[in-house]
Amino acid sequence: MEAIVVTEFGGPGVLHVENVPTPKPATGEVLVKVHSVSINRTLDLVVRAGNYPVKIQMPHILGVDPAGVLVEVGEGVDKAKTGDRVAVISSIPCKTCKQCLAGGETNCLASRQIGLHRWGGYAEYVAVPATNAFKLPDNISFAEGSVITRHFPMAFNLLVSKADVKPDEWVLVMGATGALGSCCVQVAEMLGAKVIAGAGADERVAQAKSYGADFGINYRRQNLADEVMKITDGQGVDVVCENIADPTLWPGAFNSLAMGGRLVTAGAHGGGEVKLDVKRLYMKRLRIIGAAGTKFSDVDRALEAAGAGKIRAIIDRIMPLREAAEAHRIVEQNQTQGKIILDPTLQ
Image: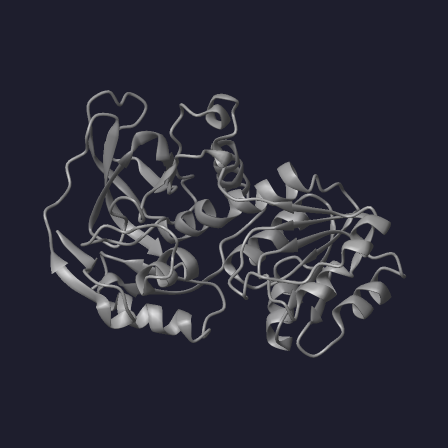
């Protein structure tokens, strides 16, 4: 099969088209003919550059969220059949640790990731555990399936499981046009919250409002906390959904919280280290909640919501798999509004 193979860390130029053996599904696995896989800033670009804190075995094939058609089913698989249209989630929980046995697969201490610990979806075919392949609704495309199963389950985890957002609460979403941020805007709106989108350019603020935000703030041009207080009549927001960890933006987001507010965070591409006003933390009874991972039940919830038209994937463009290096360059230059999808079936 044809695949994009990485043999060394570096810039986009290390992504090479090569012919490699087509994988065979092991017991409990299925083989997927890939029709889409998205470009992810952390799990593709950072991994490719050699800056991700997981040891990658070379040669390697990236791609954490492939979607396509089942073409072969391994032994022991009884709930999937060839011809099924599926999207794949990357996290493979161990199912034996304390967290997994308690139903907390998002906190698994020994989870493995498709596209990190094993070959991923930058290829014509990928073998994955059958439990990681979720059947797509008929009205959802492969490209939409890749995006929906990659980021919306995390958005549900952040806003429902962690922040416990209630109808009519105020929610500020930082990085509101990013891959995760755009999903958080839509999920917060779906939950009945009043949504403020924070973004770094006026056109991005307008984009976030087009898919559900009630208000928008350009936090590169305006004082974020002051604008939030104006919008909320001095109250502040009940929840901040933060996935940037930019030390220049964190204070504004943190200071936007109302008494008893919650800040949920998952992501640190803006730097990762920020100053914390501990006095404000305890005087205003605030909570900071870290989250990572995907609950399988949230994948089902996201696909059901997408099938019903309650949420939608934001896709910038679809490119042939062979153009993976150029796609990485485009994402690195922040030239997108939505996800870039690679399609191995395009020439």
